Length: 305
Image (cartoon, rainbow, N blue to C red; front, side, top):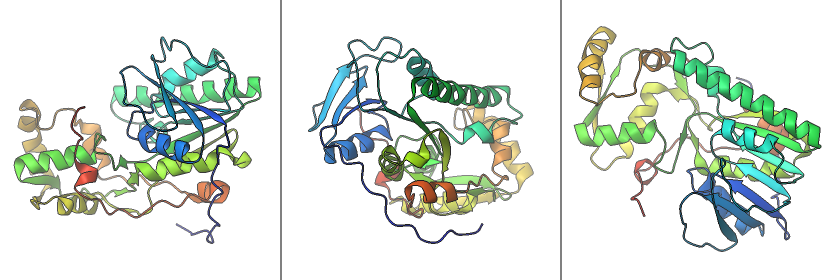
């Protein structure tokens, strides 16, 4: 993959009293995004189904997308870190006036569209339709819209892939992979995604566009898992098995709930390169994600409040 020349750091989207309405602010991407917005002086309103502890610069509103309750009539920007299909349907109704909208989607829109699993193909379809609905509604209202598509998210202990691998490795004192699990991956830290959203807010070049947001390093699946295990204090062992033996052991593991949700399509993807080019994101808003160096804290599910 060719490298673009270094870019100057993006200018922070300083709030100066501007208002932002954030959906999904209590999620793994939303939490660092709220902190960055408040730190830059934005007046932030964040929607939550559950009561949340107060934090400087953030006012929590009670509700959800289906029944959002009392929202401001107008804000400077609306940001979504939650499910894109529900958000795009809400935004299309035009309940809150704004000049800027930014929403997180997923690279699954590309990865899963040709999956052998019907449920995964449906995920890709819903993501495509949600993006189209958002861009169409924004264009009709003269709003600048951007969709950010992360790759493999980690960093808050709330992701469904790397934190889950770490949890299983702790329980089993090791983790097994087929020897052909060499497909390339680009894990991306949640704080780099929050920084990308901030950088996009005042970048006019991003209006009407969707961007893949990979992490700062491309590495084989097996190496990615090895770094996860190396980050854990107990240093669980990585077992590499011949693919036929791994598949034979997978069926009883599923029955026992150890590999619940790990379908044949996910197994096949371990051999595939899921690599995305960040050149457009670097060019348009100075995207500069970190290399993959996980710590145990990044891979530990936080205790419930």
